[in-house]
Amino acid sequence: MSRSWDLVPFVLGSLRKPLSTGAFVPSTRRCGQALLGGEALDGLGAVVELGAGTGAITRQLDAALTPTARLLAVEVNDGFAARLRRTSSPRVEVVAGSAVDLSRILDDLDVERVDAVVSALPWTVMPPPDQRAVLAAVAKALHPQGWFATLLSVHRARTEAGREFLALLTDTFGDVRPRGTVWANMPPVTAYHCHPR
Ligand SMILES: C[S@@+](CC[C@H](N)C(=O)[O-])C[C@H]1O[C@@H](n2cnc3c(N)ncnc32)[C@H](O)[C@@H]1O
Image 1 (cartoon, protein in one colour):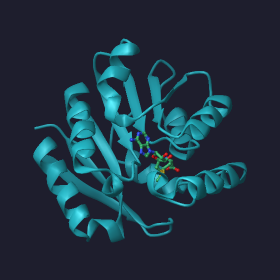
Image 2 (cartoon, protein in one colour):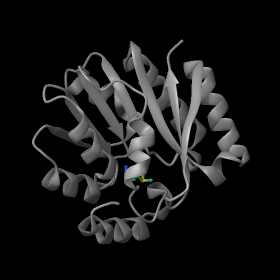
Image 3 (cartoon, protein in one colour):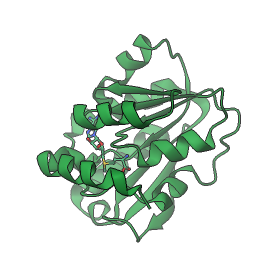
Image 4 (cartoon, helix red, strand yellow):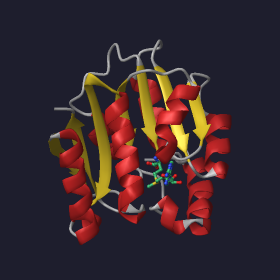
């Protein structure tokens, strides 16, 4: 479960910005497990999280990665980003900004290649040009052996917007596999793991 001291700030933040937050409560631990499961985490050099919120998944990443790995957490909500900066371990590099600007963010931080990108972005409320920009930036930044894992809510995946997003994911990465649905989450989500062709 998410830490209870994160629940109230997240709920308040999502009430202020329901569309861009995309959920009313932080992800459960199982979402992080579905995102990270089956991937080798040892020896990764740089990992990016998109839509880090108040850090439910960031903390799992921080605990799972080797101490030398860089961990960048990109979050568009300034309040969430400020909180994350206060509550995260020193190695988490919190960026208050949009995933749409990922290429510029990586340039600014002198990151040439990333080994993994993890996302809980609310894809289906993002305009398709923004979805394309984020996925293109992820594909460009990823090491050829790298991977991208994202959550998509089960009910959204069945809508036209969800189907179009999944088609875009396949167009961008080639190899896209659902790897576990977490029903005990609000909303229920599926983790999709993508590997560049
Ligand atoms: C469903 S919440 C997930 C939060 C957290 N990762 C978790 O799992 O509990 C989605 C998060 O993505 C953030 N977000 C939405 N659009 C974004 C964008 N374009 N760039 C970066 N973050 C964004 C929201 O502010 C929100 O914190």
